[in-house]
Length: 220
View 1 (spheres, rainbow, N blue to C red):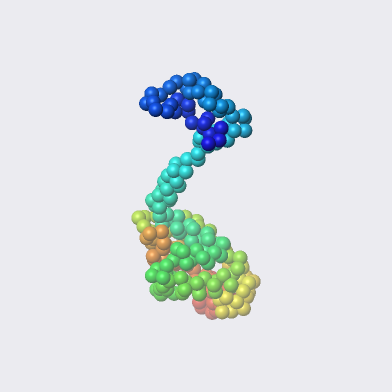
View 2: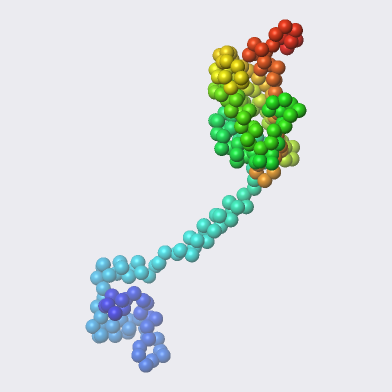
């Protein structure tokens, strides 16, 4: 044993040979001196101090476990929160990965084409989504009002854009578009399971110059 090792432990914890009696620290220190052991210098003292106080890994692991448990127990976002995120990330920011995250394969979306027709899963929705974004890359949808009842949220929104692309099956007109509509979504386990959309499709056709004759007069 190195000389400094004698000083790593409290002297009062040592026992002399062939004795069951614990001696006071000052006597043990004197005995150590008589045995030729010297008090360590500053460097050895620093080393021994580090050895006496190891890192408390157990406490750190407990804190990490508590943090992981709290994250698992965190409740899923409500319907209004998911609806706001959908319009912000999917429509305004063009984040297609949010479609896959929030709209699973079994989910149903009504009214993206004809009001009475439904699409299922992210694949069909992405076809409509890509066409509208290609036609109007600068589109922005503002949620004018959002309410929630149980697992369902409802929103009234305003759409503004410039028709600069051919995504709607016609050449770009460079016309300014402004449409209004309403949407609702029902959620479960942090995802949308059913959505509804009612929007001014006649207004879109009118602003693009597609309405002619009596229809144009009726919906001008």
